[in-house]
Every structure is written in C-alpha cells, then in structure tokens.
Image (cartoon, rainbow, N blue to C red; front, side, top):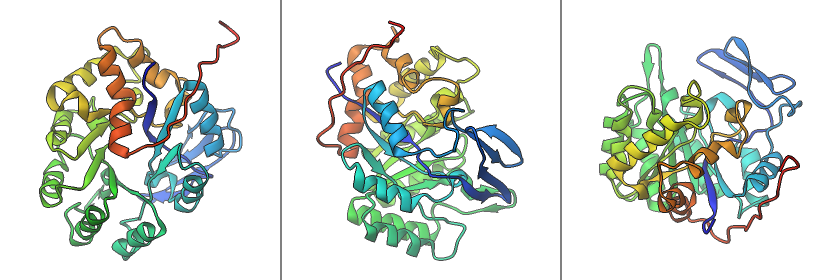
Length: 307
C-alpha cells in the first residue's frame, strides 16, 4: 500500500460503570458486560478482565497495519476523559482522543470548557442519546451552541453520532450554517441500513463536514463478510457527497466480537467494486488530512503462522 490506514472511530476504556436511561452498564468478566438489562459480549472473550486498553488496541493496530486512530466516546461506556487524556499524552502520534462532557449533568458548557482548557483537540457528542422517551435536548440549545462557538474559535473538531434517519439533520444544518468553520465528523455512516440515512450523508456536501464509517460492519452484521452491501452503500454515499468526504472507522472493540480487526477494513481493501484511488482515500488519506495526523508510523506486513 502506498498510503497509511487511519481508523476514524474507535473506543477505549478501563472499565464500564455507568447508567443510560435508568439502565445499568457494568463490566463483568471474560469480555462480557451487564448492558441495560441483559448480559452482552461487549469485547472479545480473551480480554478477560474487561479492560479495553490502548496497549491491547495498539497490538491490534500494529498487526492490521493501522497507523493511527481517533478515539471517540459514548455514554454507554461512561466518561473516559481521565484515561483518554493519559493515552493522548503517552501515544500522541498514534491517537487523537475526544473528550466528552455529559449533557445530562448541570453546567454542560463548563464541563466541556474544562476539557478544552486541559488540551483535548476534539469533543464527542453522542447526539442520539439526547433523545429519550418523553424528553429531548436539542443540539441547537443555547448551551451547546455556545460550545460550538468556542470550538470553532479554537479550531477543535466535533465528533457526533446522530439518531436514525433525518431526526437531527435540521439541527445539524443550523449548526453548520452558524459555524461554517467548525470541523464535523458524523459517525456510524449516517446510520446506514436505517431509513433516511442518506440525509445525514448530504450534510457532508458542506466544506467542513465528513462522514466516518464506524460501526458499518455492525449495521451490516446480518449480511456478514465480505459486506458487499456495505461496499455498495459506500459507493452510494460517494455519489452523494464525494469520495473526499468519506473515512473508514471500525467501532473497535465491539465489532471485533464478530470479526477480526483487520476484517473491519479488509472487505474494502479486497473489494473489486472500488478503485485503488477510492480505497486509499477512504481508508486513510482523507482522515490524514481532516484530522491533521503527522509523522504516521510505517507498519510492515507480518505473515500469519497459517500462511
């Protein structure tokens, strides 16, 4: 490959111990977690202590020849700011870690401001979690818009996952219009496989908006490898927004309970439906430019024992 692979959507945590919509999420043993009323295989079973650490991920990245990754966050994992700040300092050329404030707590702007003052260069909002039964916090609320103004001023990046379809698209259009220099990465490939996903993709027609594919193998899990439907969806999104607006993301580690980490991008690399140039843009070159990665590591291919 004459380009370096970058993962635009991954997660790290030391443990899960939180609550979402009144339901508990807590790390158990052997890769399992109590997840909102049931036990789920959250991570591979060989991660027996439930610790999803940077060092384990780096081993996966080195094996799969992934040079760098954007570490995003989600309320279902609990706030991981303290750990991710340590990771950012320890591995600055391998990770870009997003800080995350909690809109459910008082003084959201103050929380986020302290993360910015600490030095985080990106902020995550799991916007789909702002809509619950009987309650909704709008992305265009005064406090969140104040945060976007500050982020635009300081050239911070917004990582955001939206609710299915176009439910929050109008809010995003207003944000993009108000803060046109705010860099925005929309996750989960617009919740592809859900009705109306293309409306989220159309947001990337704006200059500073990108789409990343974190979770696309989860969304096409019923189809499974080699995920030809996902490849077709990537081509459709490129027709809507352009190949320069799309970036690969794995949603590690949850997705590797079903497939290996390398498989989470290998289906793109081996597809006959895409050109070499399209693969290079999607798997690394777009993310390198958008996130501003520098001094990316060269990773040699190491043969498996089965080869």
